[in-house]
Length: 184
Image (cartoon, rainbow, N blue to C red; front, side, top):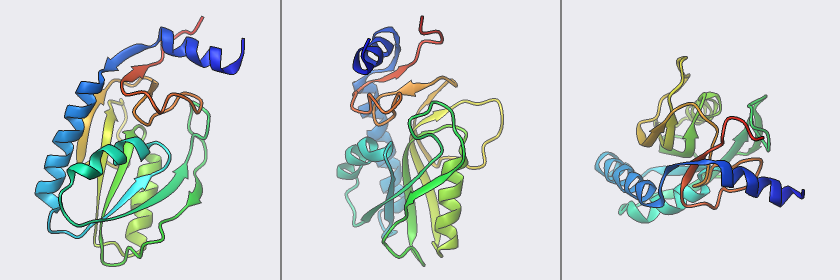
C-alpha cells in the first residue's frame, strides 16, 4: 500500500465530529466575539503555522476592523502524532512591542506550544495577548494556557481536517474528523 492509500484508509475509517457547516458557524461566532472585544485594539493577528492557515484564512474576512497579519511557526509535532521538544521555525517580523496580539491556532491540545508562543509575545513587549482556537480539547490535566475564543470543543482524540493534520495530510478537509482508535 502506498502512503496516499494508507492516509486515505485513515480517513475512510475516521469518525466525522463536526461538519463544514458546524465549523463555519463556529468561526462566525468567534469572529463576532473577537470583533466585539478587539475592533478598536489595532491588533497584530499571528497565524500559527501550519495548522492555523485554514482557520485564519476563514476568520480574517469576518473581522471588519483594521489589523496587521503576521505568522509564527513553532512545533512539537512535525509529522508525528505525539508532541516532543519545541522547535522554533519562524518568528514574527512585526514589532510586537506595545501591541495587542491575537494568536490564532487550529487546536488547543496540551497547550505547551501556545503557552510558549504567548510567552514569546509578552517577552517581545506585547501589551496584551489573547488566543483564538478552532478546537479546544477536553483533557484531564490543567493546561499552561487557555483560549479566550473557542469555536468548538472535543474529547481528547486525534483529530484532523480544517487545518489539523494526520501525518502531514488532510489539513484541506472542510469537516473535522477523529482517527479511529485502532487502525486495523
